[in-house]
Length: 380
View 1: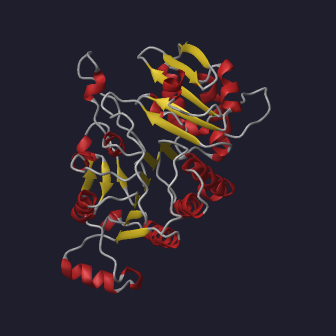
View 2: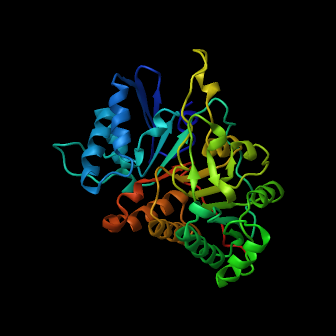
């Protein structure tokens, strides 16, 4: 039973279950050595929501105070030792508690010694609890070489992002340097004449196909990729699932409807796009099991299709900062053979010294999955 509760994590991983039951917060701490009995925290949900809203890309000088308030609202005092001792932390959350910025939590409150946010100290991941997600699948056999689908700057007009295109080229070089077979689709899919004129003016785009929505979906249906990296605009609408997704030409979206048709999802999805890490808001349809009425966002749909790890962003991100994060992420994960949790931690730490330029961008990245996940690129 103990192993079932902890999901097979070793005793160095702290796992906290944070679930909202409509009136109070249910908190349970699980490790392989101890289970702290459930605590129910009666707190005004409006207070939590207001704090969470203020923590979306907060001013640097306000981050520490906001972290302290959020930690005091959500973490019982006797649970702080669990966080302090963990060499990695996994938060199991429902859709309501997925809104919280767990990456900015601190173990220490006012009056105690100052503490860094936990995601700058140890790997931090999330697991999303839903009623429709399939059970965890068995580990897949490693394929060599690893295959990656890279989508960069697929929007046109007002949705063009030169920084996203630059990031795509940087990621392509990093992945190929690590022995990964990369299929790169960069730039919008314009009408033929305009496409030829536009691409002729950019030497870097020669030989690279545009990122049309149809082409991307076709590749995902026909081939099996280990990594899917998207850099571009994302759209999130909690009231309309068809308006949540990744933006392509003419404002078209790759949404949850299209992802329904994919049989083999990548093992790692990285989405450097504003809003793409947000999960769908819960919307009740009567009082019986409102979870069934959820409007799934793009991230939710990847989870439902069986994706193992999803790394997205909680707010609009700085293009230059996204490049710094992506470079360190892949260099550490693939070049050094680190775990995904270790690679994300290294990428956060690479951003932190540049807060004057990027703000608290390190906290925008949210990892849903297993911090122990690895991708083997040693055999070629």
